[in-house]
Length: 490
Ligand SMILES: Nc1ncnc2c1ncn2[C@@H]1O[C@H](COP(=O)(O)OP(=O)(O)OP(=O)(O)O)[C@@H](O)[C@H]1O
Ligand SMILES: O=P(O)(O)OC[C@H]1O[C@H](OP(=O)(O)OP(=O)(O)O)[C@H](O)[C@@H]1O
Ligand SMILES: O=C(O)c1cccnc1
Image 1 (cartoon, protein in one colour):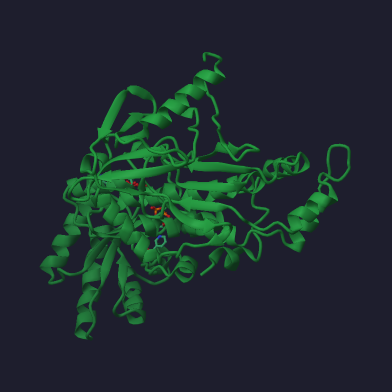
Image 2 (cartoon, helix red, strand yellow):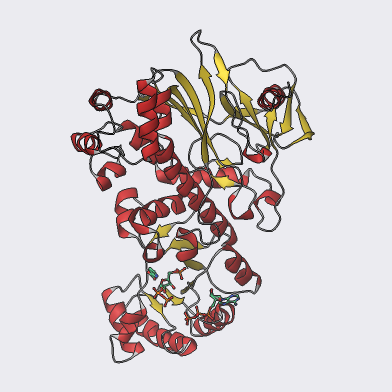
């Protein structure tokens, strides 16, 4: 389903920074609009001090690009803009150009749910300079946020070791789409259900939940509150037991669970939302087991993240379901992924690629030239061993070698015949969608398979190993030559 259209009406084409439109105007005015260009979207550092990221957000990008067309309303607004002198900001001829603009670029992208690393192009856009530039900001908006949240979710579900993880974050999320797209990305990362009903409807994600403290407070006592909830939901009740005293709450839950059993239903679970979750879950488990309720689930919530879950597991907590809100949907410890979109090449009048590079004092911020593709090498068991960024516009040498992007002394030869796959897949050809969007559960499954192919030393939270990603040696040389040229050293 095209949820962007469903949510925001017919056009998201103004969802961009003004400077994309002023540059577009400038390119149009100077006759450069149609010059062929290649841009790459990539990030420079794994989020959360981790060893990997999980790519997400492509489906939003696809819907956005498919619908890229300035509507009458968009045109009216752009016509109304004024420059500092009070005149129209854009020529009416340019406004007409925008009115008739149709997306004609080629887009290649790494499928959602793929494990990705710094410097790898997640999306490559090639086509008319004006168009390829115009879409920078929305692409970054979709990919940066959803990749960040999918990665956080992957970490949280890894810590939960197969337990059910539910996303409870809407109330603390950054606005409307900050909750909806976070829920989608959390599902990609491994979360199995959400409390967010609109996300359930839009993305077909299972919806689940318990009840709030106010439910207990609305009745004369806790036991009556549990009873009434069980009457309404005899098969799905999860009682929140910590409103007054957690272990007394568990005892009340057991009383009601006994009555439920007499009338033919079973209590589904209890939820702990405060106090020492390790101690309380162990004690609650004992009480439930002794009373003959070994199957009653114990759900925990309260500002949890992957580190707290790992710690609770280590403490022997008897929690088997996790409700995770704030820390997940806001990516609390790192609220943004610093993905960027950089020009890699421009075609000259003869149709030759001119490679482009942005210099920086910091080598990490110096962009990579070329028409980039990512090749992932695998061992005999399908485990990932190294990724190579290479320039698709030039022939590859026979003997492949990857060079660390920031340290030329770190080099890795790739043995001939090493199994490999190229990660960037065709998405649009000349503006036509050629990619079949996978269903969300398929993307979630892909994430799990990808994570299994990654060495645990790269997945661990504390000081993870660095997965080898390098520039193919001739691309590294091209980049070095350009740096030297721009520094007037060559
Ligand atoms: N055994 C534990 N080990 C480490 N952290 C824990 C443990 N139990 C709970 N926590 C975490 O400690 C933090 C503080 O929890 P605590 O219940 O003491 O305070 P609170 O959130 O202010 O309580 P309340 O919700 O009653 O206001 C929460 O993030 C919680 O998840
Ligand atoms: O803690 P999170 O991971 O964000 O999960 C969502 C939280 O939302 C609810 O709390 P509520 O809004 O009632 O606030 P409170 O429990 O902090 O008082 C629920 O009881 C969780 O604690
Ligand atoms: O269903 C729940 O238990 C829930 C939903 C949202 C936030 N906190 C808890």
